Length: 178
Image (cartoon, rainbow, N blue to C red; front, side):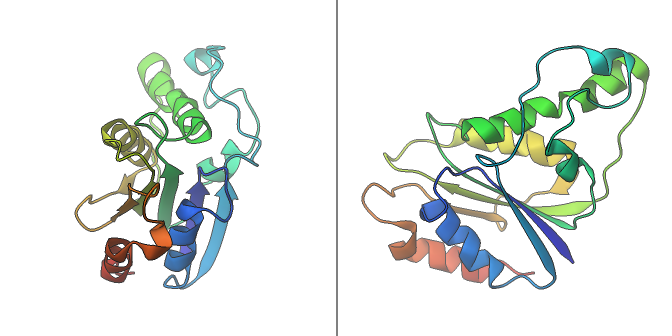
């Protein structure tokens, strides 16, 4: 099994990474983690290349994601203003080529079936509804089956309790079955 982790946190030793590292201990097989703040990943620039050509005109680290050679996709992000971090959102905008190719060129991109797991962290007790909407679109376009009842780990009170000390996080991690 090959796992791709897209980590949208700017902190490699923060709450999001703590949970990701705990998950990695349970995963067998090859694991590739991309820290989106370090990645060369531009947002969609609405150049409209994908209206007339297959794929996207921008050649950057998005190609690693589009290679589609992984069986498990883990999206991990802190919640900023009720949504995922800017690099994670940029990733979503880059998936626009899939919709545009289908709509304008009748080209269907078929990604292999995979499982999706979500990790969200954040302080301030904010509602993660917009973050969930965003990641659900990413999972949809990359053909990752995501079950929010069993494949969702979150710690949304990190201003008061770190993810490492969050008892519920430990239970959610234990519940994940690979």
